[in-house]
Image 1 (cartoon, rainbow, N blue to C red):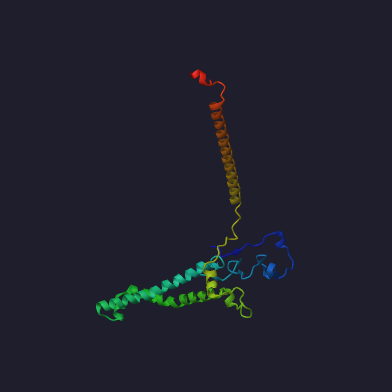
Image 2: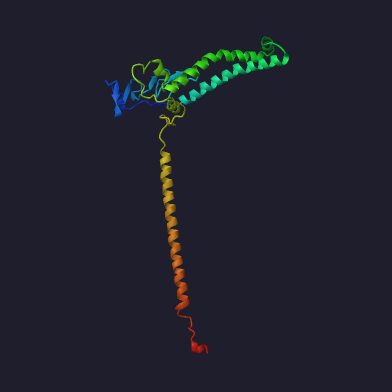
Length: 250
């Protein structure tokens, strides 16, 4: 999954040699830093990953276990991954212990004999115990980062040690921003002109359908008017109809 890679600028203007300002102030006073490799001014909280060799938006860290950077677009998935892994490790440690207790109570034995009789559960308990501290520590650490709205890169490098974190809000707002982010389209994808053409064609079809419906309504109105005129003419003043008179009837 794209972590939020910022595309490089391969234009001729960007590839021209010359000195550039390391920091460029954009609209609103936001400062962008120049990346020599990607030849772009990258936005705040982004960084060039030396492993992936790309600038990543809201760079957190490069995770060797999944072989990808963790950034703006996949950080929420990484949070779900480490917390679910911690729950799995915790279940792998607690559930075998419950099995040992129930087995010992049922057969009137102590826990050591129960562990010896249940080798598979004992192995699962050991693996869960070994993974409890590192996985649990990672889960707690990233939960703390979500509550204070920081990235691993910012926390390790003490970016907000001397200045106040401008992105930090209250705890609920920080967790909401991290765990329920707004979906962002990957910048690596090409624009979709087909959708625009489809919208134009659908708009033309809709307009033509509306024009045809209006024409049909107008035609129906004309027909009803003609029928009313013919009925009236036939009843009162049609030229071929003999008019009855009081004298003739007598």
